[in-house]
Image (tube, rainbow over all chains, first blue to last red; front, side, top):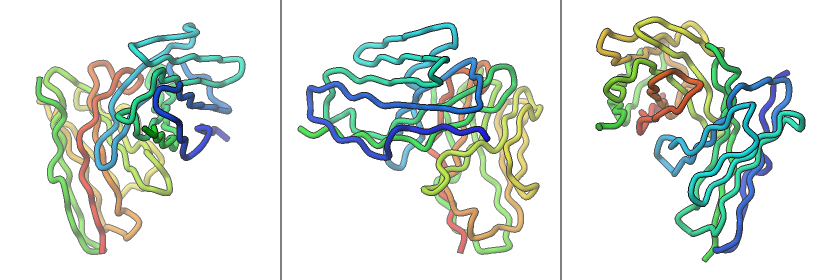
Length: 112
Length: 113
């Protein structure tokens, strides 16, 4: 069956360090993979989208990699700040009119 | 540009009742998707509408239905409410559809008693 797993429910890191979040999937062939940030009581906010033919994408302190052989995406936040504390969700889409499926999220806590 | 708006923000209903939630997408966006979010199941896709047509549907019972109007505003209806329908209902709008950048509204918190 199809499955999306985000490495852990919670991740604590020290301010200034790089946070690395993992999204693994099975039985999907996604054309796109997206990352969202969600703060408590609010809707998710789009961060980055990476296509299957792209290996890496960057936006300011954020970097996403996409390895279709390993069926894995890594999401990095460099020089992390307490304001980066939130839940991060990955989402897969198989292209065309296929529905988008979200992972359960990783709650990141950046400790000052 | 105004963001995605959802009304009402909070709702309390009793079992057996029905409820209608509303979503106004970002101007110019023709795709509206609905999601249910619960602590146990995470964010689950309900359906997507694009230019008034349902384009995709998730694995929810027929009690969950939706529609989209010519101005792209969308409504979601849940009939015969059950306790398990208590959740945060989110809508997201997109210029090109679900597989692209989606903008989420703040959600409607539905509590069924």
